[in-house]
Length: 491
Image 1 (cartoon, rainbow, N blue to C red):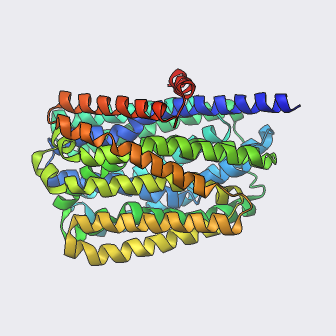
Image 2: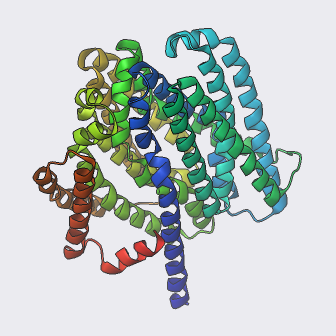
Image 3: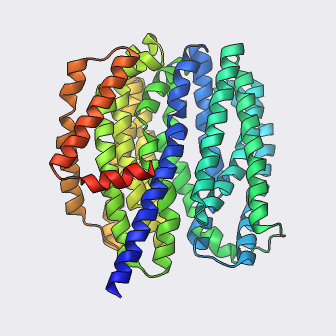
């Protein structure tokens, strides 16, 4: 019996690693897309137009999670173990109806407020506001669609579709910018790609579960679970993205153009995105099956591998930020913002750790506490931004975000230890993190030795640092050769 359980767990870990590999490959493009667009947009558009592009993308990241009422996460939490086709139909179609209804109301509101929004954010470009409204509605539907694939463990479908959409967005925006240097045309093509993929995914979902009228079974329970996540989502946006709006207000859109590339460079989302996407449905399934030991073991392993990757990436990108920004953007942007990247990288490192440990509260359906934690972090961030941006410029914005993420991480660790029966080995995690920091510092001399400037030198330096770091991990037994082989076969 024990042997069967070990074999079963080994199969689960193997599947988990495989899915991490698949999702990571997709996120190489999804995560790097903003970085790849930096040289294309910043060197072709004016700094002001590039600042408006950033505001468009940031707003597109803010509004849809609010309008979906936390229903994508609710779908994952309540339907991950569902096998009944009828219940799957009702759950998904009910959620889809609500999302479309709320998004339609938003469209009416944004139409009424078109003028002040255009004046405030987009230099009186009213067409951008209209395109933004349509893009938000499409993204609301798309977020629920992508959650469908995660909920029912259709990881390949999810990854291939996200990869394809990001690739076509990148290609068509690049073509539009290079041929026309026109922001409106670029945004229009970006929106068209999203619409096409929305309909493709819609057809794929219909083929799996069919079409049925929503019955709204248990909808009160689902809304009760999802609504607190709106507070979390709104507060998340305040912490992560509101600084762009405040920079635009206090300093002008030109400084948003400075701040955006440097912050995006340090925002290494591809490192934590696989865990953010895979852990909720997988852990929900095992938790509902009362397999708590396996849940905690997966979380411990996730933290181990995340820190092994994220800490050296954070240190490396911070040290090499100026030559990278020189390569990816313009010398004007690089000299005015390279010092932002270390703040962004450390904030992203903390956020990735939060993504993993917050699963404990998510599993126990403590979404109210998640919302309260984010509200506290958002208040800190907003207040600090208002005081520090006029005094310290864009450095004040980056510092405010870092302080907010520090407070967020501390609060999550505190509440998960105090109110949950699920407990992580925090002392072991701390020791592991310290070891990763010490080992990662060993790669810094390589960067200063090569002092990279051109594209070839930068990539050679990055490759050398990765090779050295992996060798150090093996020698110090932080990771085994077999673990490297296991990862390699899935990537």
